[in-house]
Length: 361
Image (tube, rainbow, N blue to C red; front, side, top):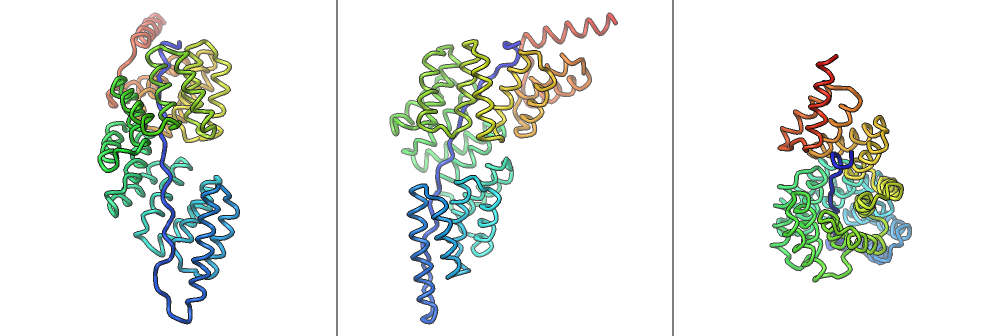
């Protein structure tokens, strides 16, 4: 069944956004001391954030807010610190407050979009990135992040358009090149994708996403050993990226190491439960193991997260066939065709054989 179900996908990287600027409004004389104190705590919090000391950063941003409750930048930066430590709900509350105080604060919009994507609310994240682009159309990070979100929903054409604009704005941004590589890979444009990866690595040889994507391309080309070397290096550089484990799992599958691949996919989902490709690939392994019920649950989740992902509809249709749930399989095949997908030869053969069996009954 591996030939029917296995489909590769590629990682993306969302760039870190800039911290909100220090408070610049000139306060009245009576409030100058409090404003200076707020600015001082904000500045120290920014220092802690850059060092990865998130709790200390949150503490200082909270003190800045005590001295100036109307400081949108302090709320925004505290939200960023909370998001970095995985507290997306707390981060979203802070970003909402920052934007209530200053609806044009682009940093808060981008970071709220990232937090929403972190919670799996990708469509809402796209809304924030779009608003950020409207306010600051020359901000390459906003274009990249919207491209990442669109790619996660399986909308590769729109993602490619966003990455192209980001590259036009900042051709030295390695993330833009490596992310466009991923989108091109997903569309089967492997040579163009590889060129983008090489450009990203020329700009930044330690770009973990580009290494990951090059590994995915090499997997697609059948050079699994070289692929694993790239993927291992990517994970070593950034072990917190769920996508990297997903792509290594796909290479391991082609090497026949299903057990190791399943372990990588469990880790990928643990790190990022909103990664549709991780659920999709784990479903592949479960089908291969004839665990069709759990495979179906994985494909259901992949479709929920990425409703434009044709491979998820294809794979769920095949699984429904294997469970003798033919009307539901027909509906999934219809949706696959709507998305421009087509049945793979092995799947068509299975479907024909099952139709014959049905008629004989």
